[in-house]
Image (cartoon, rainbow over all chains, first blue to last red; front, side, top):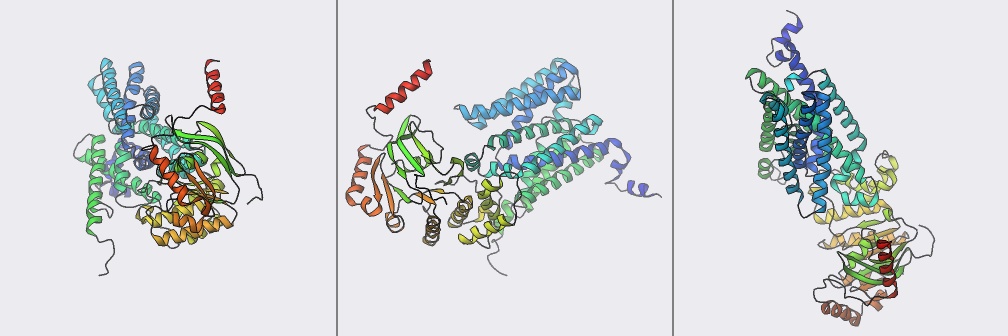
Length: 295
Length: 267
C-alpha cells in the first residue's frame, strides 16, 4: 500500500486527499484564518465587533446589485460588495459622531436596511438557491478565481498589519494620545476599516455575508480566554480559526451538514469551550485564588 | 534644554470653553522656560480647560496661546482621566515604550538606546521587574507610575500634569513628586493642576490661582494667602454652580473678532 493510500485511510485526512473541492475549501479557510482573524482580534479590542457585523451585512446589497447586473460573477459581486461595505463603514461612524443617534443604534439601522435591501434585490431576479449561496457562501465550491482572491486579500492584510502594527495597537489602546502626537490616527483608522471590508468580502465568498464575521470574531474572542498580550492573541486566534475550519469541514463531509454553518458553529463551540476551560475565562479565573497561596 | 529666555507659553486675552460656554476668560500671562508652576483653584475654575488649551485640544474662543521652543505635538500631557483602555492586552514595557513615538514613530525599529531608555524610565518610576505585567493588572498607583514613565520618555521641554495625584497613595505621590523635581532641574517646564495646597507649598515655587479668571499669580507663598483663596471661593460661589464665566462687556478685541467673523461669513 502506498503512502497516499495509507494516509487516505485516515478518516480525518481522507476527504481532503480524495476530493479536490475539500482541499480548495481547506485552502480558502486557511487564507481566511490568516487574513480575517487577526483583523477580528483588533475589531474586538476596539469594541467594534458589532461594526464588523453591520459592515458584513452592508456587503449584501452591493453584492446583490453586482449579481443583478452580471449574475453569479465573482468580480461584479466583489466590486459591488466593496463599494457598499466602504460606504457603510464611513456612514455608520459618521452618523454616530455627528448626531444624537449613538453608534450601536446607528449600526443596527444600517444593518437592517442593508439586509432587507439585499434580500429584496436578489429575489427580484434570482432563485432561492442563489440567495442561499450569497447569504451562506459556498466554501465547497470555491473556484480558482475565488481562491486567488482570498489569498490576495489575506496576503495584503497580513502585510498591512505587520507594517502598521504599532500604529494599529496605539490607535486601539490610546487614540487620544495618538491624535495629539501624530497625524496618522486617521490613516490608521480608515486603513483598518478598509482591511475589515476587504476581509469581509473574502469571507463572504466562502461563508456568505451572514457568517463572514464568524471567522473574525469567534476565534478572537475565544483566544482572549487563553492569553493576554497581542502577539500571542493573534497567533492563538489564527490557530483556533483554522482548527475550527478543519473540524467544521469534516463535520459537513461526514454528517452531511452545510459547510458554512458547520464551520461557524464549530468556532462557536471552541469559543464556549475556551470560556469554560480557558485560564482567563469567567469560571477558571474565579476559582483559582490567583497564585496567592502556596500549596 | 535650550537656554532661551522667551516665554515657552504665553496667553493673550485667552478665553476657552465648551459649547459656547467659556470656562476661563481673558487670561493674560506667560510662563518662562524652566518654571515649575502649579495651577490651583476651586472646582470648575477652568484649570483642566486651561491645560487642554495649552495642549492644543481646544480651540480658543478668543485670544491666543503662543508656544515657543516646543511644538504642540511634542508637549507631554498627562490627562486627568487616563484615555488609556485599561482592559487592553498590553504589557507595561510596551505601553511605556509608546512614549518614544516622537523618536521612533510608527515604523522605526526600537534599537538598544530605546531599550535602555525604557529600562531607565521604568527604574525611575520604580516599576523595574513589572515589565511584562499587563497594564490591566496594575494597581492605581502602579498605573500612574507607568504613565509617568510614559511622560518621561516623551522627553518634552513642556510637561502638563492634570491632577496627577488624585486617588494615589502617599508613597507613590512622594516618588512621582521627586521625578517632577528632577524634570525641573533638567530645565523642563512643568505645569501641574493640583488640589493639595500643602503639596503645592512644599513643591512648587510658583502658583497660578484660577477661578474662571486669574485671581493671583506669582511666588506660591504670595499667591496662596487666606485672602486670595477666599476671593477665589467667593467668585466660584457667586457664579453658582459655575456653568460658565459671566457674560463680559465686549472689549475691543472681541469686537474685532466678531467683525472678522461676520465679515468672513458674509464676504
